[in-house]
Amino acid sequence: MVYETVIGLEVHAQLLTNTKIFCSCSAKFGQTENSQVCPICLGMPGVLPVLNKKVVEFSIKTGLALNCKIQPVMHFDRKNYFYPDLPKGYQISQFDFPLAKAGVIELRSGKKIGITRVHMEEDAGKLVHPEALENAEFSLVDLNRAGVPLMEIVSEPDMRSPAEAKEYLELLRNTLRYIEVCDGNMEEGSFRCDANVSIREYGSTVLGTKVELKNMNSFRNVELALEYEIERQKKVLSEGGRINQETRLWNVDKCITISMRSKEESHDYRYFPEPDLVPFTPAMDWIKEISMTLPELPLIREKRFVSQYNIPLNDAQTFINEKELADYFEECVKLCNQPRVVSNWILNELLAKLKEKNISIKECPIKPVNFKEMIELMDKGVISGKIAKTVFGEMFQSSSSSASAIVERMGLTQIVNTDEIGAIVDSVIAQQAEVVTSYKNGKEKALGFLVGEVMKISKGKANPKIVNELLLKKLKGI
Ligand code: ADP
Ligand code: ZN
Ligand code: MG
Image (cartoon, rainbow, N blue to C red):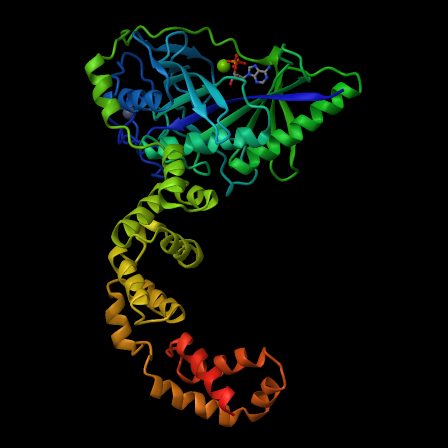
């Protein structure tokens, strides 16, 4: 039997607001436990939630960026369940009237993945299992995260391979980062993904029984978990078994999925409308205003980079994956109008240096104007490509220096004077008699060695073209 894979993804994205969704507590990550709480997010009886306008604005912005229809009426619902990190006994979410519906994300192949819905909800708190107390029979509760605003973005079951799922996730995350509503940090949990996957006989139009996968904290793990799960399901079916509708957890150490709960054990959340928050309709003018703030979106920018700057797709992809890197590239190109040269320097030199120092492009010590000046110095023949690397390294170390100041300070100006180079060439020919003889006897490679020697003596400053010409001329004369 030939099987087809069907995947649908549910993403929880934490919104970059200063405060929580229904109170004015800070939503900042990584603060002292229970230092950002108030009666509202602690779920005390009698308190009233007040909706944070920024949450609605960011969610509308997301809906628009994902080509959704913003719904004319929306309201909140209570999703009821018990867990120690949820003091109210319910989570305020959206059920049958979400903020946005029917959107789409287009993959690089042009294939469209449907977005079922985007809705707003609050996060729960966090249980802390004290490692220091190895045999502790208790856990601690940190409610800083309770009430932090989330969006849930649900896709249609339109993906057909783990690779498509990964691309969808990357594009979605990039989009959220571009529109500045979520930092997309999977490790810190501000961008989380549950993956639903089933298989069916190829050509069939009915969906197979799905399994929901949780606990993947990187794109790579989502891909690996899906690959594992698809093979597992194929094995079960080919042995005549049936797939259980269940939730399975990805075990990152063993690289397998493990059953967590079956459908029978799943909750009945008894959703009902949240009586403390009224249904509302966002004004058309406001939606329009928000739509005006949408920047150029990642995939469109990627395509533009390829066509406008004539750089390889792979390079464009690397740039747009980090908005600030793409911005930096464009800023440099604007100044010196040599996209390919700039692109190569960034990809071959700059990224390695940033990685070495473990800093982001935002903290890059080389300002675009200085970058441009270095390229100009190369163009004018003041420095060679090799020396430029030294200058580049220096600019990176001493953030404020301009390229020309460094060239002057370190005495790196290229030697173009033929007498000066000629003298070095003569001395190399005199010192390397053996190599010269083997060159004369037809060993072409010997020339490269001689060029290298001249460059070495000139400390890399001799113009390589003149060195070559002079060497050839003088060797002919011997
Ligand atoms: P649930 O009620 O279990 O949450 P939903 O119908 O809301 O299920 O779907 C949740 C996610 O699972 C969506 O992203 C959807 O695209 C996906 N999905 C639904 N059915 C399947 C299936 N048979 N195979 C793969 N994914 C599916
Ligand atoms: Zn609060
Ligand atoms: Mg669902």
